[in-house]
Image (tube, rainbow, N blue to C red; front, side, top):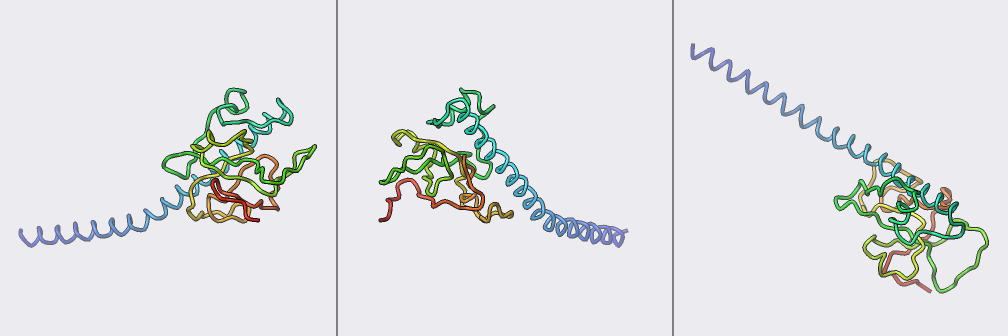
Length: 177
C-alpha cells in the first residue's frame, strides 16, 4: 500500500514538473502576443489623432488645436485615447517647431523639425500648435514602424511624410546653432 502511495507521489511530482515547464514556455509567448496587440493598438490610436487633426483642419483651415480636449469638443475625435505602451497612459504631444527662423508657408507641408513635449508641459508652452502624438515609452518594439524600433520614435502627426523622418527637438532642449 505504501508502495502505491510512493508511485502516486512520483507521478504527481512529474506532472507538476511538466506543467511548470509548459508554463515557463507559454508565458513569454503570451507576453509577446500582448505586446504585439498593444503595438497594433498604438498604431490605431495614433492614426485616430492624425485623422482628428485633419478633420480639425477641414473645419478651421490653417488652424491647429491648442490641446487634445479641443479635438473632442469640436467632434473631431470620439474619445481621448490613452497611450497603450505606458502605465501612466499619457502621450507626448508633437508640436510644430517654431525655432528662431520662422518660414511663412501658404500650404502646410511635412515639417523638417518637430517639438515633442510631455502632455503636462503643454500649459507652459505659448501658443502650442499640436500636429500629433507619440508614445512616451522608450522601450524597444517588436514591430518596426516607419523604420523606427522604439515607441518614442513612432510618430503620428498631420502632414507626415513616411519617407522622411523629421528632426525631433525634445521639450526643454535648446536649439543647436
